[in-house]
Length: 80
Image (cartoon, rainbow, N blue to C red):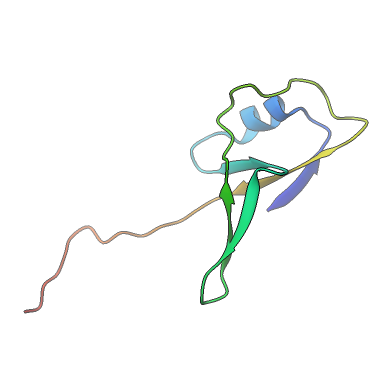
């Protein structure tokens, strides 16, 4: 989901950083698409290091919040 905010990058990171979401700030992401037409973001995920604490009231910033769900089978079945 693409969002826009007047909050600082540091405030955004603190709010959404909870292991459920990936956070990408504008310019750090690329759009990927598979053969089924599903789209997701890849790129440099924010780790919280070196984030600006300055408010963006004059120029709101855009960022992406993404949640991935992956399913792995807990065991391997061999029918042969």
